[in-house]
Image (cartoon, rainbow, N blue to C red; front, side):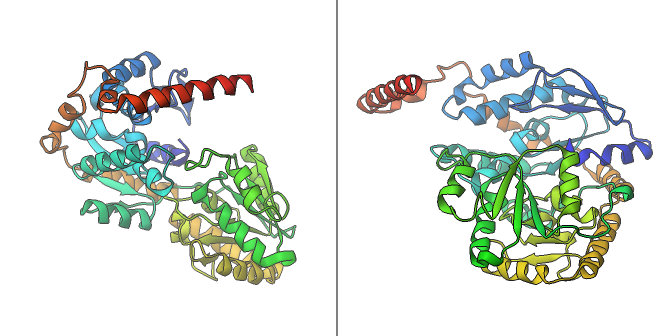
Length: 422
Protein backbone atom coordinates (compact mmCIF):
# COMPACT_ATOMS: atom_id res chain seq x y z
CA UNK A 1 0.00 0.00 0.00
CA UNK A 2 2.97 2.36 0.48
CA UNK A 3 3.29 3.31 -3.18
CA UNK A 4 -0.48 3.95 -3.38
CA UNK A 5 -0.64 6.04 -0.21
CA UNK A 6 -0.74 9.36 -2.06
CA UNK A 7 -2.13 8.04 -5.35
CA UNK A 8 -5.52 6.93 -4.05
CA UNK A 9 -6.64 10.37 -2.73
CA UNK A 10 -5.48 12.03 -5.96
CA UNK A 11 -7.40 9.51 -8.11
CA UNK A 12 -10.52 10.05 -6.02
CA UNK A 13 -10.25 13.79 -6.66
CA UNK A 14 -10.46 12.95 -10.36
CA UNK A 15 -13.75 11.14 -9.74
CA UNK A 16 -12.45 7.57 -9.65
CA UNK A 17 -14.17 4.98 -7.48
CA UNK A 18 -11.54 2.67 -6.03
CA UNK A 19 -11.55 -0.70 -4.32
CA UNK A 20 -8.44 -2.39 -2.92
CA UNK A 21 -7.86 -6.10 -2.49
CA UNK A 22 -4.70 -6.82 -0.52
CA UNK A 23 -2.98 -10.14 -0.06
CA UNK A 24 -0.05 -12.39 -0.83
CA UNK A 25 1.45 -15.72 0.18
CA UNK A 26 2.26 -14.07 3.52
CA UNK A 27 -0.71 -11.70 4.00
CA UNK A 28 -4.23 -13.10 4.31
CA UNK A 29 -7.08 -13.40 6.78
CA UNK A 30 -7.04 -9.84 8.19
CA UNK A 31 -10.26 -7.90 8.73
CA UNK A 32 -11.53 -5.28 6.30
CA UNK A 33 -10.33 -1.77 7.11
CA UNK A 34 -10.29 1.72 5.60
CA UNK A 35 -7.36 3.66 4.19
CA UNK A 36 -7.90 7.24 3.02
CA UNK A 37 -11.62 6.51 2.97
CA UNK A 38 -11.19 3.46 0.73
CA UNK A 39 -12.21 0.03 1.92
CA UNK A 40 -9.40 -2.52 1.89
CA UNK A 41 -10.33 -6.19 1.65
CA UNK A 42 -7.77 -8.87 2.47
CA UNK A 43 -7.25 -12.26 0.87
CA UNK A 44 -9.46 -14.90 2.49
CA UNK A 45 -7.38 -17.56 4.21
CA UNK A 46 -9.70 -20.45 3.31
CA UNK A 47 -9.61 -19.47 -0.34
CA UNK A 48 -5.81 -19.26 -0.23
CA UNK A 49 -5.52 -22.76 1.28
CA UNK A 50 -7.93 -24.14 -1.33
CA UNK A 51 -5.66 -22.89 -4.10
CA UNK A 52 -2.61 -24.27 -2.33
CA UNK A 53 -4.15 -27.70 -2.80
CA UNK A 54 -4.75 -26.88 -6.47
CA UNK A 55 -1.00 -26.37 -6.83
CA UNK A 56 0.06 -29.28 -4.60
CA UNK A 57 2.05 -30.74 -7.52
CA UNK A 58 4.46 -27.79 -7.08
CA UNK A 59 5.59 -29.20 -3.71
CA UNK A 60 9.19 -29.27 -4.99
CA UNK A 61 8.95 -25.44 -5.25
CA UNK A 62 7.24 -24.49 -1.95
CA UNK A 63 7.55 -20.69 -2.25
CA UNK A 64 6.44 -20.67 -5.88
CA UNK A 65 3.48 -22.83 -4.90
CA UNK A 66 2.46 -20.30 -2.22
CA UNK A 67 2.78 -17.38 -4.65
CA UNK A 68 0.67 -19.12 -7.29
CA UNK A 69 -1.99 -20.00 -4.71
CA UNK A 70 -2.23 -16.40 -3.46
CA UNK A 71 -2.36 -14.98 -6.99
CA UNK A 72 -5.17 -17.22 -8.19
CA UNK A 73 -7.08 -16.91 -4.90
CA UNK A 74 -7.02 -13.09 -5.14
CA UNK A 75 -8.07 -13.25 -8.78
CA UNK A 76 -11.02 -15.48 -7.85
CA UNK A 77 -11.96 -13.32 -4.84
CA UNK A 78 -12.00 -10.24 -7.12
CA UNK A 79 -14.35 -12.06 -9.51
CA UNK A 80 -11.79 -11.57 -12.30
CA UNK A 81 -12.44 -7.82 -12.19
CA UNK A 82 -16.15 -8.09 -12.98
CA UNK A 83 -17.81 -4.67 -12.63
CA UNK A 84 -14.56 -2.67 -12.85
CA UNK A 85 -13.21 -0.59 -15.72
CA UNK A 86 -9.56 -1.27 -14.90
CA UNK A 87 -7.50 -3.42 -12.55
CA UNK A 88 -3.95 -2.60 -11.48
CA UNK A 89 -1.85 -5.51 -10.23
CA UNK A 90 1.77 -5.86 -9.20
CA UNK A 91 4.39 -8.23 -10.55
CA UNK A 92 5.69 -9.27 -7.11
CA UNK A 93 4.67 -12.75 -6.05
CA UNK A 94 3.24 -13.48 -9.53
CA UNK A 95 0.07 -11.64 -8.45
CA UNK A 96 -0.41 -10.45 -12.03
CA UNK A 97 -0.34 -13.93 -13.58
CA UNK A 98 -4.03 -14.98 -13.56
CA UNK A 99 -5.08 -11.50 -14.74
CA UNK A 100 -3.05 -11.94 -17.91
CA UNK A 101 -4.68 -15.32 -18.53
CA UNK A 102 -8.24 -14.22 -17.84
CA UNK A 103 -9.78 -10.84 -16.89
CA UNK A 104 -13.14 -9.09 -17.17
CA UNK A 105 -11.51 -5.64 -17.03
CA UNK A 106 -8.59 -3.80 -18.58
CA UNK A 107 -5.33 -4.68 -16.81
CA UNK A 108 -2.25 -2.62 -15.95
CA UNK A 109 0.70 -4.53 -14.48
CA UNK A 110 2.84 -2.37 -12.20
CA UNK A 111 6.44 -3.60 -12.30
CA UNK A 112 7.25 -3.02 -8.66
CA UNK A 113 9.98 -5.65 -8.23
CA UNK A 114 9.20 -9.23 -9.22
CA UNK A 115 9.94 -12.47 -7.41
CA UNK A 116 12.13 -13.55 -10.30
CA UNK A 117 14.09 -10.29 -10.23
CA UNK A 118 14.71 -10.67 -6.50
CA UNK A 119 15.90 -14.25 -7.03
CA UNK A 120 18.22 -12.95 -9.76
CA UNK A 121 19.62 -10.17 -7.55
CA UNK A 122 20.12 -12.41 -4.49
CA UNK A 123 19.93 -16.14 -5.31
CA UNK A 124 18.58 -18.21 -2.42
CA UNK A 125 20.60 -21.16 -1.15
CA UNK A 126 19.25 -24.44 -2.59
CA UNK A 127 16.42 -22.60 -4.37
CA UNK A 128 18.14 -21.46 -7.56
CA UNK A 129 15.93 -23.66 -9.77
CA UNK A 130 12.82 -22.14 -8.19
CA UNK A 131 14.08 -18.63 -8.93
CA UNK A 132 14.87 -19.48 -12.56
CA UNK A 133 11.43 -21.05 -13.02
CA UNK A 134 9.76 -17.93 -11.56
CA UNK A 135 11.67 -15.61 -13.87
CA UNK A 136 10.83 -17.69 -16.95
CA UNK A 137 7.17 -17.83 -15.93
CA UNK A 138 7.16 -14.04 -15.46
CA UNK A 139 8.79 -13.49 -18.84
CA UNK A 140 6.21 -15.65 -20.60
CA UNK A 141 3.21 -13.99 -18.97
CA UNK A 142 4.44 -10.37 -18.92
CA UNK A 143 5.21 -10.56 -22.64
CA UNK A 144 1.45 -11.00 -23.15
CA UNK A 145 0.27 -8.45 -20.54
CA UNK A 146 -1.89 -5.65 -22.00
CA UNK A 147 0.00 -2.75 -20.38
CA UNK A 148 3.18 -2.50 -18.28
CA UNK A 149 4.50 0.37 -16.17
CA UNK A 150 7.39 0.89 -13.76
CA UNK A 151 8.64 3.55 -11.33
CA UNK A 152 12.23 3.90 -12.60
CA UNK A 153 13.92 4.21 -15.96
CA UNK A 154 16.44 1.49 -15.05
CA UNK A 155 13.65 -1.01 -14.38
CA UNK A 156 11.90 0.04 -17.60
CA UNK A 157 15.11 -0.65 -19.54
CA UNK A 158 15.63 -4.00 -17.79
CA UNK A 159 12.17 -5.30 -18.67
CA UNK A 160 12.25 -3.89 -22.20
CA UNK A 161 15.46 -5.83 -22.77
CA UNK A 162 13.99 -9.03 -21.33
CA UNK A 163 10.54 -8.78 -22.93
CA UNK A 164 11.34 -6.96 -26.21
CA UNK A 165 8.27 -4.75 -25.77
CA UNK A 166 7.46 -1.20 -24.56
CA UNK A 167 7.18 -0.46 -20.84
CA UNK A 168 5.74 2.83 -19.58
CA UNK A 169 7.68 4.99 -17.10
CA UNK A 170 5.77 6.77 -14.34
CA UNK A 171 7.32 7.48 -10.91
CA UNK A 172 5.22 7.10 -7.76
CA UNK A 173 3.47 10.13 -6.23
CA UNK A 174 4.66 11.69 -2.99
CA UNK A 175 2.70 14.32 -1.08
CA UNK A 176 4.86 17.03 0.50
CA UNK A 177 4.16 18.27 4.00
CA UNK A 178 5.66 21.78 4.26
CA UNK A 179 5.48 21.64 8.06
CA UNK A 180 8.12 18.87 8.02
CA UNK A 181 10.54 20.61 5.65
CA UNK A 182 14.04 20.79 7.09
CA UNK A 183 15.57 24.24 7.46
CA UNK A 184 19.14 23.12 7.98
CA UNK A 185 21.28 20.29 9.30
CA UNK A 186 21.78 20.15 13.05
CA UNK A 187 24.17 17.23 13.46
CA UNK A 188 27.33 15.89 11.83
CA UNK A 189 25.66 12.53 11.40
CA UNK A 190 24.62 10.60 8.30
CA UNK A 191 21.68 8.25 8.01
CA UNK A 192 20.46 5.36 5.82
CA UNK A 193 16.90 4.08 5.87
CA UNK A 194 16.69 0.56 4.44
CA UNK A 195 16.51 -3.10 5.39
CA UNK A 196 19.86 -4.67 6.26
CA UNK A 197 19.86 -6.56 2.99
CA UNK A 198 22.41 -7.30 0.29
CA UNK A 199 20.94 -5.22 -2.54
CA UNK A 200 20.35 -2.28 -0.18
CA UNK A 201 24.15 -1.88 -0.08
CA UNK A 202 25.21 -2.00 3.60
CA UNK A 203 28.37 -3.84 2.52
CA UNK A 204 29.18 -0.98 0.13
CA UNK A 205 28.75 1.53 2.95
CA UNK A 206 31.00 -0.54 5.22
CA UNK A 207 33.73 -0.75 2.57
CA UNK A 208 33.54 3.03 2.02
CA UNK A 209 33.69 3.78 5.74
CA UNK A 210 36.77 1.55 6.03
CA UNK A 211 38.40 3.72 3.34
CA UNK A 212 37.41 6.84 5.30
CA UNK A 213 38.91 5.48 8.51
CA UNK A 214 38.78 7.89 11.44
CA UNK A 215 37.61 10.70 9.13
CA UNK A 216 34.31 8.96 8.48
CA UNK A 217 31.20 10.57 10.00
CA UNK A 218 28.81 8.55 12.17
CA UNK A 219 26.28 6.67 10.03
CA UNK A 220 23.04 5.34 11.53
CA UNK A 221 21.40 2.51 9.58
CA UNK A 222 17.64 2.34 10.24
CA UNK A 223 15.85 -0.84 9.18
CA UNK A 224 15.18 -4.42 10.15
CA UNK A 225 17.67 -7.22 9.77
CA UNK A 226 17.15 -9.90 7.09
CA UNK A 227 18.65 -13.27 6.31
CA UNK A 228 21.35 -13.58 3.69
CA UNK A 229 19.51 -15.75 1.17
CA UNK A 230 22.65 -17.52 -0.03
CA UNK A 231 23.70 -18.68 3.46
CA UNK A 232 20.66 -18.26 5.71
CA UNK A 233 22.79 -16.18 8.08
CA UNK A 234 21.64 -12.88 9.54
CA UNK A 235 22.93 -9.99 7.41
CA UNK A 236 23.70 -8.05 10.58
CA UNK A 237 25.81 -10.94 11.89
CA UNK A 238 27.52 -11.34 8.51
CA UNK A 239 28.47 -7.65 8.39
CA UNK A 240 29.82 -7.75 11.94
CA UNK A 241 32.12 -10.62 10.94
CA UNK A 242 33.28 -9.10 7.67
CA UNK A 243 33.61 -5.49 8.91
CA UNK A 244 34.28 -5.80 12.68
CA UNK A 245 35.78 -2.31 12.96
CA UNK A 246 32.97 -0.63 11.03
CA UNK A 247 29.56 -2.29 11.31
CA UNK A 248 28.29 -1.80 14.84
CA UNK A 249 30.89 0.93 15.50
CA UNK A 250 31.23 3.66 12.87
CA UNK A 251 28.01 2.43 11.25
CA UNK A 252 25.34 1.81 13.87
CA UNK A 253 22.37 -0.46 13.04
CA UNK A 254 19.38 1.12 14.77
CA UNK A 255 16.74 -1.46 13.88
CA UNK A 256 13.15 -0.78 12.91
CA UNK A 257 11.52 2.33 14.40
CA UNK A 258 8.27 4.23 13.83
CA UNK A 259 7.81 6.33 10.66
CA UNK A 260 7.53 9.45 12.82
CA UNK A 261 10.89 8.78 14.49
CA UNK A 262 12.45 8.02 11.09
CA UNK A 263 11.38 11.44 9.82
CA UNK A 264 12.75 13.12 12.95
CA UNK A 265 16.12 11.41 12.56
CA UNK A 266 16.28 12.20 8.83
CA UNK A 267 15.54 15.87 9.50
CA UNK A 268 18.33 16.02 12.09
CA UNK A 269 20.92 14.30 9.87
CA UNK A 270 23.56 16.06 7.81
CA UNK A 271 22.99 13.85 4.76
CA UNK A 272 21.11 10.70 3.72
CA UNK A 273 22.95 7.77 2.13
CA UNK A 274 21.28 5.41 -0.37
CA UNK A 275 23.96 2.85 -1.41
CA UNK A 276 21.61 0.32 -3.08
CA UNK A 277 23.10 -1.99 -5.67
CA UNK A 278 19.57 -2.50 -7.04
CA UNK A 279 16.19 -0.96 -6.36
CA UNK A 280 13.11 -0.55 -8.50
CA UNK A 281 12.64 2.85 -6.84
CA UNK A 282 13.56 3.74 -3.26
CA UNK A 283 10.86 5.70 -1.53
CA UNK A 284 13.14 6.52 1.42
CA UNK A 285 15.38 8.53 -0.91
CA UNK A 286 12.46 10.53 -2.31
CA UNK A 287 11.06 11.16 1.18
CA UNK A 288 14.46 12.44 2.35
CA UNK A 289 14.60 14.80 -0.64
CA UNK A 290 11.08 15.98 0.18
CA UNK A 291 12.32 16.85 3.68
CA UNK A 292 15.02 19.03 2.15
CA UNK A 293 17.97 16.73 2.78
CA UNK A 294 21.09 16.26 0.69
CA UNK A 295 20.93 12.69 -0.62
CA UNK A 296 24.00 10.69 -1.69
CA UNK A 297 22.61 7.96 -3.91
CA UNK A 298 23.93 5.03 -5.93
CA UNK A 299 23.20 4.65 -9.62
CA UNK A 300 21.68 1.29 -8.65
CA UNK A 301 18.71 2.91 -6.87
CA UNK A 302 15.68 3.70 -9.03
CA UNK A 303 15.17 7.07 -7.34
CA UNK A 304 18.45 8.24 -8.90
CA UNK A 305 16.19 9.46 -11.74
CA UNK A 306 15.31 12.40 -9.48
CA UNK A 307 18.88 13.45 -8.70
CA UNK A 308 21.05 15.86 -10.66
CA UNK A 309 24.57 15.46 -9.34
CA UNK A 310 25.79 18.49 -7.42
CA UNK A 311 22.50 20.36 -7.85
CA UNK A 312 19.84 18.57 -5.77
CA UNK A 313 21.92 15.65 -4.48
CA UNK A 314 24.93 13.51 -5.28
CA UNK A 315 25.35 10.34 -7.36
CA UNK A 316 28.06 7.64 -7.29
CA UNK A 317 28.50 4.41 -9.30
CA UNK A 318 26.91 1.38 -7.67
CA UNK A 319 29.25 -0.94 -5.74
CA UNK A 320 32.02 1.68 -5.90
CA UNK A 321 33.14 2.10 -2.28
CA UNK A 322 36.11 4.31 -3.19
CA UNK A 323 33.91 6.74 -5.14
CA UNK A 324 31.43 6.81 -2.26
CA UNK A 325 34.18 7.55 0.26
CA UNK A 326 35.42 10.46 -1.87
CA UNK A 327 31.88 11.80 -2.15
CA UNK A 328 31.35 11.56 1.62
CA UNK A 329 34.49 13.64 2.16
CA UNK A 330 33.19 16.23 -0.32
CA UNK A 331 29.73 16.50 1.24
CA UNK A 332 31.18 16.66 4.74
CA UNK A 333 33.12 19.78 3.73
CA UNK A 334 30.02 21.65 2.54
CA UNK A 335 28.81 24.42 4.82
CA UNK A 336 25.22 24.59 6.15
CA UNK A 337 24.14 27.14 3.54
CA UNK A 338 25.35 24.94 0.67
CA UNK A 339 23.58 21.90 2.12
CA UNK A 340 20.42 23.95 2.63
CA UNK A 341 20.44 25.08 -1.01
CA UNK A 342 20.86 21.51 -2.25
CA UNK A 343 18.05 20.37 0.06
CA UNK A 344 15.72 23.10 -1.22
CA UNK A 345 16.42 22.03 -4.81
CA UNK A 346 15.73 18.41 -3.82
CA UNK A 347 12.36 19.30 -2.28
CA UNK A 348 11.43 21.36 -5.34
CA UNK A 349 12.27 18.40 -7.59
CA UNK A 350 10.00 16.07 -5.61
CA UNK A 351 7.23 18.66 -5.60
CA UNK A 352 7.40 18.93 -9.39
CA UNK A 353 8.19 15.36 -10.47
CA UNK A 354 6.17 13.40 -7.88
CA UNK A 355 3.13 15.67 -7.60
CA UNK A 356 0.22 13.31 -6.75
CA UNK A 357 -2.33 15.13 -8.91
CA UNK A 358 -0.06 15.05 -11.97
CA UNK A 359 0.86 11.38 -11.42
CA UNK A 360 -2.82 10.45 -10.90
CA UNK A 361 -3.81 12.19 -14.16
CA UNK A 362 -1.07 10.29 -16.03
CA UNK A 363 -2.13 7.04 -14.40
CA UNK A 364 -5.73 7.62 -15.48
CA UNK A 365 -4.55 8.14 -19.07
CA UNK A 366 -2.70 4.84 -18.85
CA UNK A 367 -5.87 3.06 -17.70
CA UNK A 368 -7.76 4.49 -20.68
CA UNK A 369 -4.98 3.52 -23.10
CA UNK A 370 -4.73 -0.04 -21.82
CA UNK A 371 -5.97 -2.47 -24.50
CA UNK A 372 -8.33 -5.32 -23.85
CA UNK A 373 -6.51 -8.46 -22.64
CA UNK A 374 -5.70 -10.89 -25.45
CA UNK A 375 -6.10 -14.11 -23.47
CA UNK A 376 -5.52 -16.25 -26.52
CA UNK A 377 -1.77 -15.56 -26.23
CA UNK A 378 -1.41 -17.37 -22.90
CA UNK A 379 -4.66 -19.32 -22.47
CA UNK A 380 -2.56 -22.47 -22.58
CA UNK A 381 -0.66 -21.39 -19.46
CA UNK A 382 -3.35 -22.30 -16.93
CA UNK A 383 -3.61 -25.79 -18.45
CA UNK A 384 0.16 -26.12 -18.23
CA UNK A 385 0.28 -24.98 -14.59
CA UNK A 386 -2.50 -27.34 -13.52
CA UNK A 387 -1.64 -30.25 -15.80
CA UNK A 388 -0.38 -32.50 -12.97
CA UNK A 389 -3.25 -31.58 -10.62
CA UNK A 390 -4.33 -34.55 -8.52
CA UNK A 391 -1.04 -36.41 -8.67
CA UNK A 392 1.01 -37.25 -5.60
CA UNK A 393 2.82 -33.97 -4.76
CA UNK A 394 5.98 -35.93 -3.85
CA UNK A 395 5.94 -38.00 -7.04
CA UNK A 396 9.09 -36.22 -8.28
CA UNK A 397 11.08 -37.93 -5.52
CA UNK A 398 10.62 -41.20 -7.37
CA UNK A 399 13.13 -40.06 -9.97
CA UNK A 400 15.89 -39.71 -7.36
CA UNK A 401 18.20 -42.55 -6.19
CA UNK A 402 16.83 -44.28 -3.08
CA UNK A 403 20.29 -44.34 -1.47
CA UNK A 404 20.59 -40.56 -1.65
CA UNK A 405 17.02 -40.04 -0.40
CA UNK A 406 17.61 -42.36 2.58
CA UNK A 407 20.88 -40.66 3.52
CA UNK A 408 19.30 -37.21 3.23
CA UNK A 409 16.25 -38.19 5.31
CA UNK A 410 18.50 -39.65 8.02
CA UNK A 411 20.69 -36.54 8.14
CA UNK A 412 17.64 -34.27 8.27
CA UNK A 413 16.22 -36.29 11.15
CA UNK A 414 19.53 -36.00 13.05
CA UNK A 415 19.71 -32.23 12.44
CA UNK A 416 16.13 -31.78 13.63
CA UNK A 417 16.63 -33.81 16.80
CA UNK A 418 19.91 -32.07 17.65
CA UNK A 419 18.34 -28.71 16.90
CA UNK A 420 15.55 -29.39 19.40
CA UNK A 421 18.04 -30.48 22.03
CA UNK A 422 20.05 -27.29 21.55
